[in-house]
Image (cartoon, rainbow, N blue to C red; front, side):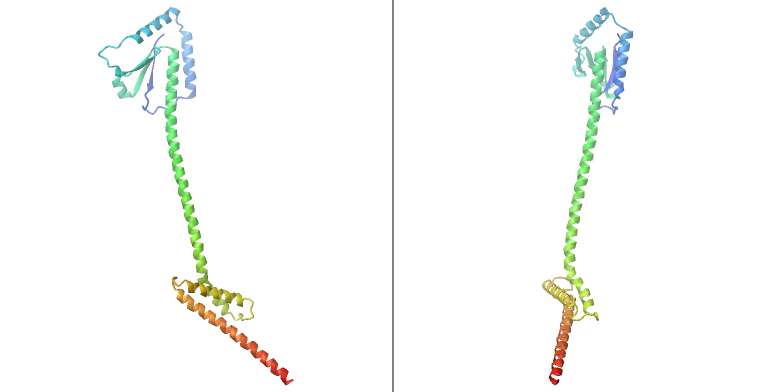
Length: 246
């Protein structure tokens, strides 16, 4: 039986791809067919086993450094040719039977699968870390957006008092507005609230200007009330005089 030689890529060697699942079964079928077509006699197998054990137990020459030897396993000796490893990055494995070929191929497949899985794990870990950082950034932006919305609403509630100046002025200058109008008292109450707020917050820009304008509208409203009271008193007095004359 001839010695089968195969080269396995070293760990950390070139970027070899993971063998396809069908490669193993093809290797098994090839080896089985090979042994069936070229069977060995018991005597030949015994001779091969004896030679294998003899070479496995043979001591190394003194001039060879044992640092170049990686190990032996069931007649499978793997030696490192220093110059060849540096040039090709490969280890030459001597396989003497089918079982050793299967074991070598299984170990090679497991090593390549482990290396590939490690690369994918690193890739997915990096991607997951980036996704988490992106989500954290989005959450931070949402919190900042909510804070700005609350700030804008608080600012708008304060500016409403200043914005009421135009609304109150338009209503008071309307020809249909008088003391008997149903909107007069609510409008007067809102005017008093605006004056109180502006007076208590003099730190706002142009608050003094708005206060003067609100005071003018208040004076106008009080004038309308005075005129209405005088008109009512005058009408009442006229009615009493008419009743007395009768």
